[in-house]
Image (cartoon, rainbow, N blue to C red; front, side, top):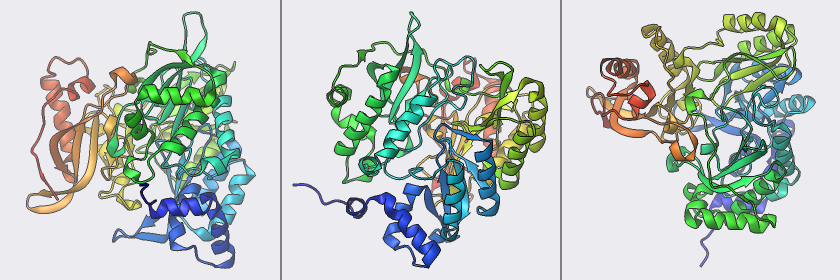
Length: 528
C-alpha cells in the first residue's frame, strides 16, 4: 500500500512550484498576501524567510540567492548585483559554498524591481534553490586558467539550459539535485560531495574523459560519493546528467524528506543497478572506468594569487573573504575596481572566496593591491584562506548559534596569535547540525548548539576533526571527538590544538594529518 504524500509533496503535485512567481507579483503589485502554504515554494526562486529574535520565521524579510550558471559575473552583472545589495539588502551580502550570491533583508514588495534588474543583465534566481537541479558546481576559472584539463563552460551551460527549458519535468524532485561538472586541474568543485559529478582527466593518449561519481553529500546523512566505474565522454555529459535526474525524480523517496536524496536511492539500489538504469535511459553503454584519476587534496584546491590566464596578455587573481560575508559597500567597491582596470568580471569559489578574471597583465598588480586595501588578500593566511561559515541564527530558522560575525572575529584573533603559521588548515563554523558550512569535510569543524558550561546554558560548539577530500578512495569525513567548547573558548581551543601539534606531532608531518589521528583535546561539556 502506497504511503500518503506529505503536505509539501501534495502541494508540489497540485501546482508547478515555479508558478509561485505569480503570487510574488500579486503581493508586490496588488497587495494580495502570499498564502502561508506557498511560503515554502519561494525556495524555487532562492528565497527563505528570515527569523525573528525569538526563532520564528519573519515573513517580511527574506534571504535570497541568485543563480550564477558558471560561477561568474561579468562587469555589467557585477554592477547590478552590487546595486541590489546596497538598495534592497541593507548591505548584507554573502558568498556561498555553492558559488552563489546570497542577499538578506529582501522584501516581496521589491521583487519586481529586483527581477527586472536581474533580467537586464541575463541573471536569474529561478531554481536557485528548491526541489530540483541546483546551480551546477564548476571551476571559477574554467576557460581562463592556462593549466586546466578541459574548458567545461559550454557543457555547464548546456546542462543548465536543458533543465531550464524543460522546467515542467524537472522542478519537482523528491529533494534537491546537485551536479558538479569540472575540468579543473585542482578539482576545486568538490565532486566527492555532489549528487552526480563529472570530473575531467586526460588519458595517456591525451583524450579527455570525465570520471562519473554518484551519491555524495553532507548534512546529517553525509557520505562520500561512489565511483560509477564509468568514464563519460564530453558529448555524453548532458545525456548522463539528465538520465540521473530522471532516475532520481521517478524513484527517489517522497515519503521521508530525510531519506530523499540521490545517495539514499544509491544506497538502496547499489551502484551496479544505478549504472544499469543510467544506461537504459541513455540507450547505450558507457566506457568502463576501473581506475580513479589522480585527485588533488582539499588544501590544494584554490586559485589564490596572481595567475597567468590562457589568454595572452591577461591574468586572473584569487582573493579571500572572511567567512564569505561581504558588506554591500565592499561589493560596490569591487565593481568599481573591476571597472577601473577594465577587468572582465568576478567569479565565486566553492570556499566562499572569489576570483577576478580578465585582467591585463600591466595593471594586474595595481588591481590586486586595491583589493588588498579593501580587506581581501590574494595571499591570505592559512586561517583565512579556507575559513567557511553558514548563515547561523542571525537569519536561519535552524541556526542555534551565531556564526558569520563570530567566525570573522575568530580568524582575526587566530591570525594575531599565530602570525608565522603557514600550514594549510580548513576551519568551518556551522550554526546547527545540518552543517551547511561543511564541517564534515573540514580539518576543524565547529557545529553549533547549546551546552552547559560552568553551570550556565550558553552557545557552544561540538568539535569535529580530520575531514578531507581527495577522491572517493582517500577522502575522509571528520569525526566527533566527544568535545564541546563554549563559544568564548573556541580561539583558545584552536590555539591548544596548534601548540600541542608543535610540541608532539605524533609522527605526522602536517597539521591536517595530525588532526586526523589525535585523541580528544579539552574537556567534554554537557549538551542541552
